Image (cartoon, rainbow, N blue to C red; front, side):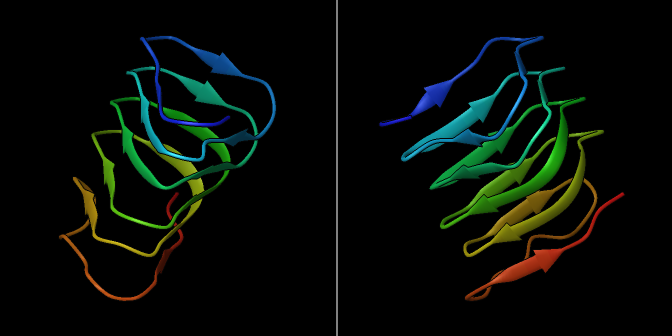
Length: 93
């Protein structure tokens, strides 16, 4: 998808979600595949079936479930302290 994407709550995607700009996934949304975006804001109780990859900052709110995250920017999460560096790679369960 070109540009940025902001979703409401309870939105579902069956495959991969690729956004060329920023992504904001609303609470209780689901992505069955991988997610790739420039930056991401992931709401409460979101489930991502694959890998979340960002080239900039990523924020994860509470109870986000995903296989893995690869963020080149700042990673903010209720699960971890804020991390900085050229590349973050975390596996979360």
